[in-house]
Length: 628
Image 1 (cartoon, one colour):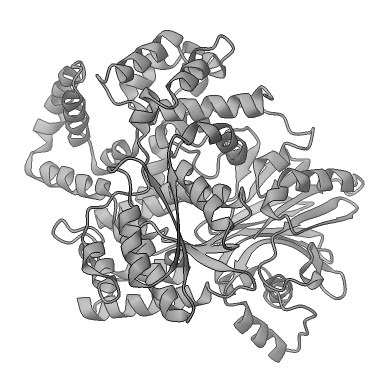
Image 2 (cartoon, helix red, strand yellow):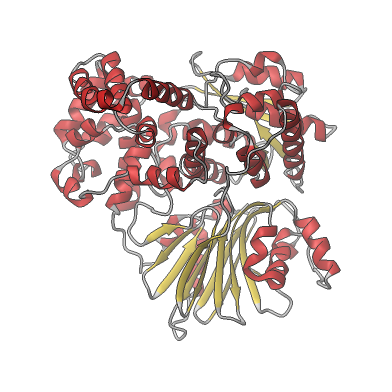
């Protein structure tokens, strides 16, 4: 795993500074502490930080070129089928100097051009400078496991694995994108292709782009289809799914450095560990993080799996530790990011890196197979929508919701939210389910200048776009597609930044594109079957996992956030929220924030997620906008 950077000036007479490329690389040294490289020639510059995983020799040094020096690449990721591709290219007459996947991409591009992407199975973000055509070609993997940011102003194109590297160029100004600002507080992260900054963007998963004297051109090279449905029996589907997952795990166990796994004790990570144990004779190294709160601690379940498969197991308990890393979280994310499970992800990555350089994870099971509680809630809401006519729901439910929202009890608030969701269409209802910062509260705390800057922008447009883009009429499939394109990208941001902060590579077998495509072909009713979430995945994994893991209540990678704000991080948060120099004052009404804070502290409401989003925004602002 690595970090990549680069710059292209559209005017061929404007050279790129090698010192700038080197400085950009240094800002993300932790992504690749083993080696660094810079290539500049005229108006193009490429940089690289290397974390050695395959071919530990100097032959894996990047940026790497073809033998004739006409193709240069800086690459972040792993291509799991590179040996098969290499063998095919050798049969076509190509020769190789190294044993790494980077060189394979160079000659695959030479053979197939931009169509090389369809042959790649893995996670990646790379930039290729095609000297013969004076074209810079960039691509990001199908589901977005590896990041790729870029700045474009019509004259200059700058790209990097992280935003902080782009900000190293004095040409780039730090200006707030207010649409992204609004998205962040609604979704808890900034959805692709926006970033919190104007003129800085994310290349979307499954997209590639070219940069040349003619400008930039972007296209989607891959998308997941729900149109074709598998017609086999449950037994046939579960057996085939297990076979595909087994292959996906096997491919991800290729490594020249120590390899292990994250183990939460849920069925996703447990299934991955079981398949890993099948693939190797020595014990799998497993790492788990828990809390000193029984309601959030999954370590006892992780121990069951560790004992069942006799893994080399390691544990860490997050006890009064959250406040110690808040500033670090803001630094590594580069833009506001409010998924509180970043805290345990940070610690499990730190623990894992002490034992291994590569870790497999169970990410993707919930999005592919309908594992979240919100899918159950959504199903209940849609059943009610179908039973109560629209002419009753639409005029009367909002009125009742408004009355209940004035109550202080949490039950009133939940009822008000439910009634509002029932009064609207399914796509908007799903958006509300995903939204933590409700409109009434949002309008209460936002100041007038921020409202003016946001204007009539509606963050629902993000959900609506993907919900209606899905090539299916099945509602569950549409929201699974939406989550694959939106919510999952936020999770992958978390995993990438927290693992790379510790120079750890994380691989996700359930997010192999062949697994995703197969999951999309499984009828929706087999994913959420009679109220049972992840039904078909459980049918698959029950062949290899103990019964007590299969049907236990899902906990998720959650943290005791409400308690933290009333205990461990209370004083620290209060200081950040209400300091006279707080960045939040530029955007929010202090009286509104105080009202929100008081309601949480007196336990009238649970505003933990909202408070966390405000805290993460403030920490980001101080780190990157105030320079503190």
